[in-house]
Image 1 (tube, helix red, strand yellow):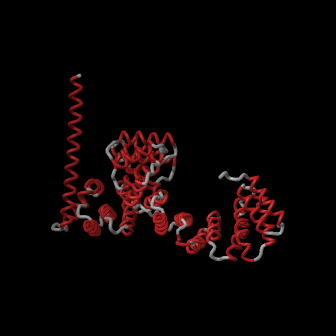
Image 2: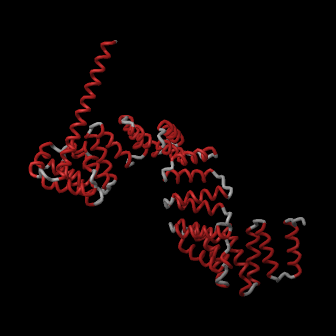
Length: 466
């Protein structure tokens, strides 16, 4: 049967209205007909006239439709007034509660929206209206109530087991909560249901990368890019996956592309510096991190990493400048203060180093570094009794601490301090480990010296051959 035209519908209603001009049903239906054709002013006029002829509960649908018209015209307060009149007539009206909630979401009144959404859900027969659960889930996500939001999306899946959007949103929440195995599970369910959007593979790449499944991450990121997901963010993450997979050239290529797409991509810039740093190209790393800081001048990872690069070059003053700038940005960060304590020891600022090291030790009692650095500072200050106690505290937390910090101990602890500690604590186990650390440091230094001399000799020999 052919669908009647607008003119035919309006003609039928007008003819009925002429027969009974005071019949409110005709005015009501005429208003609804105009709504059908998005003729809001005519619809409003007819519904308001119908309300002058209707009584009591008969007004319910007219008020509801008027609320819809006001909402369509952006007059949300007037829409709320109409829908509240519906609730006064019928407090269990699902559609009025839902419509009120939608306006409250628009106004960012999320608690009020939740109240009406819960009522709409409660009064909905069999609680099977997907739209209510969807809106509830989205509001809960906005409020950060992720576990309940997951429950709502799962309810939708019970209603419709093939709802791809519900699976997608659960995967997204698990990503946000760092539940990466669960995120992968729901991404795979999306694909099994026929989902092929690039974002699914991007999410799988993120989850795989977080689980250190780097080959899976690379595969999924590459699929996402082939499907059109090619923004700066995915290139940054793909570069990270390449780097972890031992493909530094591919990583650098991706980060270069990411920076071409978005010159303000601080992560791609910082990561580029890390590749250079890991390969002991300290000048290039520092140069890259200077670019990073030009993008975001208080980017902590770059400030801390620059300090480490300068320290590796034994440029202690520059290292100190960088780490102090980092402390200005994050004055209570115990990792930064540990780094600061270490660098202060290299420039013999022993008292200040002790303050920083003890702060870190107190704040992070499970870390041996604060205690070890405190011990080194006490050695520089000739307080050998306290130094030994701090060395013992560090050892209690990690029995490998001396072998892990051989270079540090060898370079910042005066030989006289070790000799003084040995003299009064010959049979102490900790002292023996300290002596071993110093001997190992001297051995490494002698080997390095020999290698340099051999290298120099080789150069001279080669010059004779030219």
